Image 1: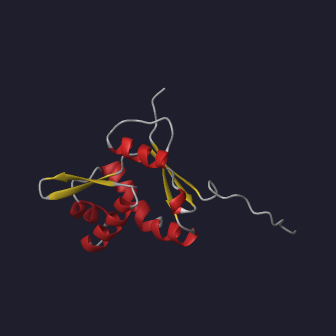
Image 2: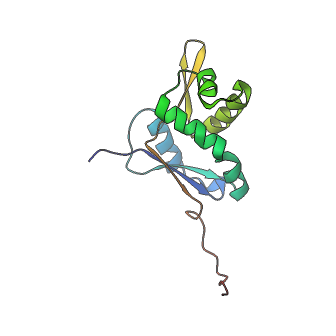
Length: 133
């Protein structure tokens, strides 16, 4: 059975991101597989919706499916301004969701995972309040 490299995105305390998760991300970036998913933790629901929106999903799909050679080509494929695409891709890189491979003078965006799972409740201790019908 082939190993699947998965990126798990959660909501929680970014300071609580363990060294083990950071090491998994470094391992995956190096091209090796790990037995556990790499994890990116965003601070809150607002940051999650700011980072993962229709525009960024379109960028990730293009990077995964079309393997564009540069930021400029990525922008062309999605029909958007290069500056805006560059800003969003830089944010995704800073969060560890994509990486850039230098290709001459161009930066080629790479989504090094087979799958992306967003689990907003992964670090949630659970809400003790009960729902009322």
